Figure (tube, rainbow, N blue to C red):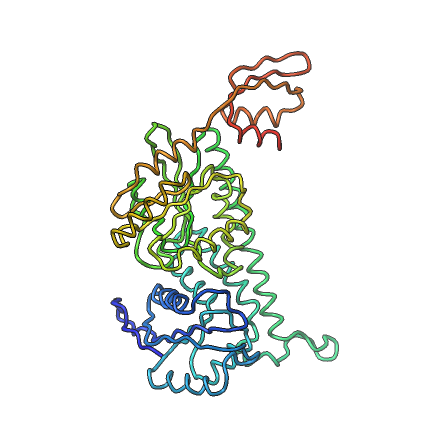
Length: 432
């Protein structure tokens, strides 16, 4: 076990909670990733939450987890001594913990406990600024809590309701709590449905302009917000911290060829992203699904950059991102590499059409990326003549929304249109 110095964070008059971070390295569940970087990421997550001071971190090696306790009795006793000696107020488990395991571990170690999902939810709740962000976090948190109603409740055996022998035994408190959560989830989903409708209207309005959408995606702390600020001149918070920004931001950007695009900065991804969060933030991430170009920003200086990139690709696939959507990899943070390694990365990127090595912090390498963005969003176009029946107003409206109709002649039963479109627009029209 190693002791980690506390980060420099103002306490604002509140005594920070002392936290112990544990990464269970379970042989039966190992996914090929080294436990040391995983522990480092868990510690970074803990430090991203205000009010926490990490006083210890450890990799706990297990052949397989114990169903009711996760760890063995000897390890639990050792951890309990550590908790007591270091006055630990919160134990963070970097992995899933069942409600029963959480309750038993809290009882035996004498302190509160959060698993990876719970910690990420806490961070998101702290970061959310917009009404939409707060709703999405609340939805994810309620979905998470609903599965953990057995935890630390002392009144679950009590019965309530019922009027003597007429009303029957009533309902358990846990059933009432679950119903209350279900009602709250329903309310939030209805509110988020309005958000989805509003976003859909905004997207329809943008299509009429029309400005292409360029979405920034990537692992958390890959430098998306720094790149966003560099391209737009905005002042989105960009810190060396996991999930520094949560709420999406959109700005107009003029490319070197004079064309305008809308750049969208999205929430960062992370390995084992809780399914509750993926579901809750689906409305926000719909901007990525509708993007004309995706810039996958990678921290090329990170020792696990390949594993992080694989996690991002998995989440994009889970979100239903169309494989036909153009994607450019941005190998960011080359300024953090040794000069020889940075040059080697630049040479590798030069040999590929869809990869660009740069530093969003210094601005080095931005020119080629912007030129490639212009080329991708201005693909070759071809002319075509289409004949539509007057009843096919929906497809005719789509063509005009795309701004690709050059001429239109209306006959007795049909309309003939001349369009100037890209291969992607032709494919989309055929699918209507």
